[in-house]
Image 1: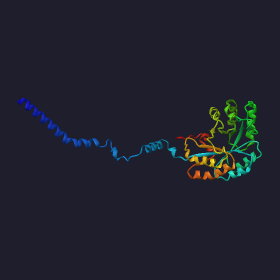
Image 2: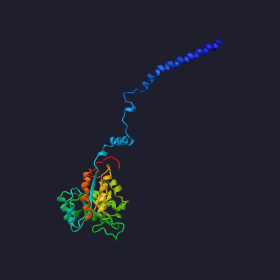
Image 3: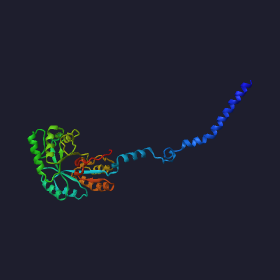
Image 4: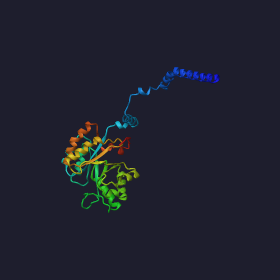
Length: 298
């Protein structure tokens, strides 16, 4: 029994000694564990940031161009019928680009006026639409029934009919723009002239972009039509909605016509857009045309 009692007392003494040592050293160990490593501050000393804020800052650090201004290029088509709306459009303080139809009564007059004003001019080249002959593209149009020589001659006449042009866009053409063979001949001729092409996007199946890439033609494509219904309120709203279409990967390209409703909407909306930081630029400043690419998010 003596052995058993002595052994038990030894065990109890050892336990008491261990507990005493643990009690004495525990506060020091806890303090050591909370000390910052490698000079970094304690976690609770870092101000809290919501997850969305931290993600936003990472995106801005990675892509500084997110802070750039939104840029919009405006093309007004169908110029050449009447000079009165053209003169009214020229009163708007913005570098609007004008696309002139060939062979109209005021095609050359309009080009002369615009050239004197320092404005950019495109040839608005007529092409066959899907619903031809119900809808007629007008004089100087390109049709699928034409052979390559006839197409070349028609394009040449159109290019010569409008002076001071720096590029071309299509008038109608929902059928013609879908034909690789016919369109290829046209785009090659435009490239040979040192011009660029803006696809009016009258069909989702346009072969314009892929052909332009194949032959090395400077190319851009329209993003929005602003006046299909010739309704002032609708056009004005489309323009104001540009404030919510942040796209720093490329400039937004919009197209319209010299309707009175469109002119009124442009006069009233553009000052509001510019006041909010939107920059209106000529077509020649498009990244796709200049070759200067920008990076960003849609």
